Length: 276
Image 1 (tube, rainbow, N blue to C red):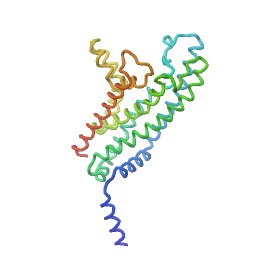
Image 2 (image 1 turned 90 degrees about the horizontal axis):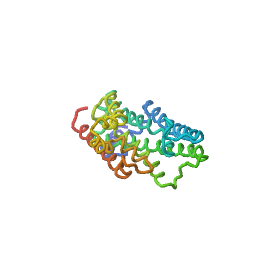
Image 3 (image 1 turned 45 degrees about the vertical axis):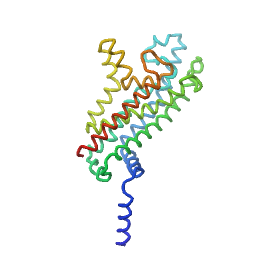
Image 4 (image 1 turned 120 degrees about the vertical axis):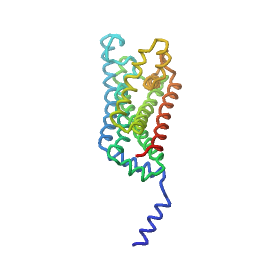
């Protein structure tokens, strides 16, 4: 028995830390935190429910003969109605990304995690890959359900979006990528700030308030800055028709990806240099 135990330990040491093992560990952590699973379920419900609800409101507006621009709380485009839950889902995914990382600091588990992954950076990449893949998968399924539930509601008024329409499939496909990106920014902020409350507040500020505050700048400067803010680039990614005050979808996607990469890179530097 002693020989078998010794050989097994030696074998484990020889194999060392690998990315698949880190991914498996992070997957177990994700499933083990009830707040994360409940939050992901809530994200799915928001995306699946608010899309048809927004589409129903749009259909009632058309039935009443009211102009869309004159109807409060009704999206101005059919695809905007299908994606009616994204506005709230982005906040949830950002907060869940923060929670996925900040739980380690709050419970002290970060010390055990870094002891198991002494090179540190694979821990961050593992969390990012697992969380990003889960959010993207949940979002993609939820958006598909929202689309299928919304089309019949709008079809009677001749405004139902079709996947063959220009920009529709691209906007629907960009939604999971955008939500996953917001979640990854949340993960990175949790590493940088090591405070759940502060990191969640920062995510909320970036998503809901930053573009509004940019409007306080001189008009010429605001017009130059606002299209490059995180939430505004996300709006451009999910818009079917190009708008003069937004970037085109591809440049917007590249700018948003730059935010995600920069935040994760900064988190990687902080994780590698700071004590747990």
